[in-house]
Image 1 (cartoon, rainbow, N blue to C red):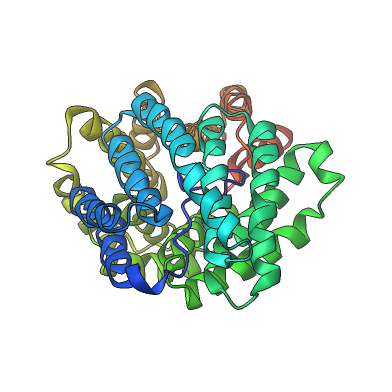
Image 2 (cartoon, rainbow, N blue to C red):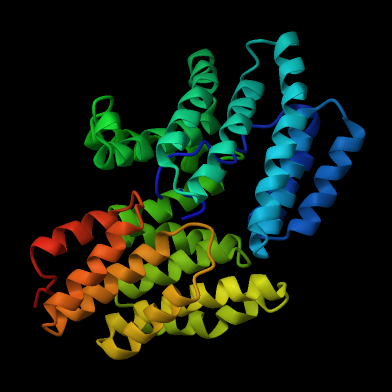
Length: 373
């Protein structure tokens, strides 16, 4: 969800179409990065910064590789402090480039993305309106790039993210609802993210992961989620975020055997992580086990695992805590324990997440959750 994406807009890490002189190195680094091989990605990006010290894109990618590596291993505070410092350090490099070439699309897109990354910290702290305001300012640079070259495909990643999650925000905040039509913005966002996924160079894989998250948790189009997830997992087998979302999509499609097989191998993907990193992905693994048990009708086992997730929660965003509260409420409803169900729906709502899970919790407060037979 990180990345996103999720639920509100952040400009995110936008891998735009690369300048010719660093194109090959950037593509190699991106492959490493997307496959969670951050040490190898850092080596590639470090070489770029040494060869082209005034080129901000090398520093931008190096920053993101280090930032994501810290997060992967549970060092959220260090990651956020590092990110804020690097944004201020790298910004002048982009400003110098844009003074020389004010209409250079790639630098407009990346500088907008860089400035928008500060919104990610507020996202983790659930300061959604502040995130929205920060993103609003950053997106103006990206919109300028789009006006200059609407066929610069990678710009559709930040544009699509902004549109979709602007629509999500409109569902949760009346002040945003005055600006956006939720349904139209969501639809436009998905269309633009799909353009980035199908045509993008650097934006392709991040756009795919955001679409996977949207189809899985927001629109509940599990077939589309599974199709994208299968592609991402095949290409980037070490990417635990894509793998986790893909497994969950398989569960909802009742492809239980395939999901179980992937879950058995799941711990191998994080066996070399730090202690904190292992604890993070153990919680995520337990969440997937809970979803699988619930799908199989093993409600007590599912509830126990969802409670474990809540009690040991250590993920960057609160999305899976809200989902766990929601699903415990649903389990209580299925067992005709309405008051307990309401308690957990209220807990989901109190996370103040801008997710579909919170919207559903509000609905189930009014009428019990049931399974159609």
